[in-house]
Amino acid sequence: MSIWRGQQKLILASQSRARKMLLENAGLDFEALPADIDERGLQRESGLSAPGEVASLLAREKALFVSRQKPGQFVVGADQTLALGLRMFSKPAGRAQAAEQLALLAGQVHELHSAVSVARAGKALFADVSIARMTMRRLSASEIEAYLDQAGEAVTTPGVRSENGKVVVSMPPATPLVQWHSTLKIAPSIELKAPDSVPWTEVWQLDPGPMWHIEPRGIPEVYQTSEQSPGRIRQWQPWPGEVVAVAITRPEAITGPTLTIDSSRLELRRIKKDRREKKAIIRYSIKNSLVRPIRRGVEDRGRVLYEPLNRERLSSHIAEFGDRVL
Image (tube, rainbow, N blue to C red; front, side, top):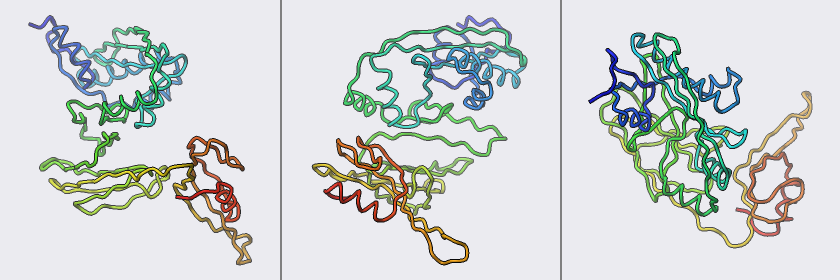
């Protein structure tokens, strides 16, 4: 039996499974509708930086957005922000960022700012923010990796949620494109299949990173590049029911110190307009496993560096390393 006594259903401006469960457990009869707002854009425009204020802003905007569509009903909006001191954390954009965030939170006391707002007919009627302070135990690097392995696949795009392994998508008539990013659980193979009968088309993009080798089978791919991942983006544009199977392997590690050039680009620039001489520059992304730094700013501990070098300077770096180039 519902304890809600309104003439019309209460509306939750969210598709979050956790928030829906809270209202269900409270015995409320409600309807869940997504709030299609640009959370990061609203935060930037507001100029707010305090975690509680940001959570309150987003909760209010979610409730107002849906209440304008359902003016005769009460709408509840909610949002949470996590902060460590003055630093706010957003949804990680991938496994590496998730590991970084867990390492920062490990052994620390962080705050979870939970905001709620109630609106009706485009007007905010109620708002509140509560703070929960939580202490995370210390975690080693191996424990963080094990946790992320156990977590498996996760959607990393802010505002896009998943339930029971499926992405919950809201696509109003005026929205021509919906996209999201996911991290995938480490496995020897993955299979992608387009739905058999849906009123949309899909585009799949895969960025395996420089350490993984993939062998796709199925429909042909459309080769794509990006500034962030030059030459690595693999893309497919399937018809309904088509399948791509991807075998994933990782080359065996080489013992001892190594120097790895992830990418390189040759640039030719004309020295003078009326002459044919050109200046050649090699720009490369390089990682090294040395404990000591290499001269000219090439740092250790696997950091990625971009540096303009001519051929002689690149050769001197490799010669100084004194081992092998992969």
